[in-house]
Length: 467
Image 1 (spheres, rainbow, N blue to C red):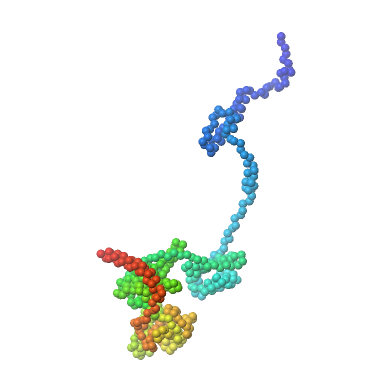
Image 2 (cartoon, rainbow, N blue to C red):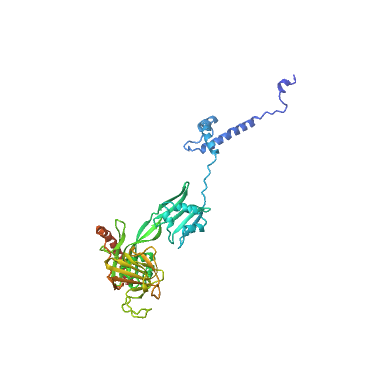
């Protein structure tokens, strides 16, 4: 029997069904399960713990989750401070101010007052730093060649720097309460060096050939100046050996230092000298036996170009045209050349003296006097009755009095009797003090041995070349 289908059983949904087919459900289930599984596999693969074996694909989802990742701790409490810190503004770097820099060298006649005015620097700043106890004496006394480095801000002094000597510098800087000055130590290193020179034409040309600076060769001439006249006595073939210091600072060569020991061979004569510094800090040169290389007097008290007139009792005077004894030596030199005291003594005359022109007479020990004539001017720092030391500048070359050209007329008298300054036997200076003699001999021995070993090496090398 045919019946009509009941609407109550079959018509509670729309006629067109929205039910997902079973096969599509399985597809979505596979995708939903597969994506987390693949992601989890990638996480496990890149984990640091490489010793664990990767899970098999056939694991149940619940097993994979439990074994792969333990429960993570709640990191919110730990992340909170990091989040807050990351949002805080970074501290701003303090900008380093840039100041104008001035570098200048002192020339004759310069003062800091003039230099400050020239560069529009505040004179009140200069007055303030000159009053500093550590700086005042180094800013008032300037010498040509001194160098300064100044930083300023629109004319306001920020800092000042000056090298005082090889091992010390002055630095003035602006602080919160004013200017501060300090002396800075500049450490140096010294290295010993040996050198040899042979004279073919002149002492200075031989030094240049040996790679020696003029300063060093001047020191060498100064050491033996009492025994060798480096203008008149030098001969071709003379030679010398030097052991000296080289000064380094911050790993860089700065200058040649003191001569430690030297030997000079002149016209068949040999002279040796060793430098010695005693416990009181006094340095001087002595022979290997401990005698001073200095004499009580120097032969020529001026750096001259030539002897224009020698000691001659029967010389005809160039101006008076009469026979008049020339009882001294005339050293030709340019006007203004410094004249030095020939020995320690006391100035007993300073002024104008007839045909001598501007003249100085010095009284020395042993009833010896020396006279210096035709000066262009006197040294301001020495006056009548002042005591002077050998080598002190007492005046300057000129041609005052009866003189035809610029020169120094120099006389040497013993008990009032004129002696030839070029040939008179000069008294020796004092030898090394008795209390230092043993120490000197102990130190001088190895130094002289080193110099002699170098000399033997040079002589052997020269023989090899000639053979």
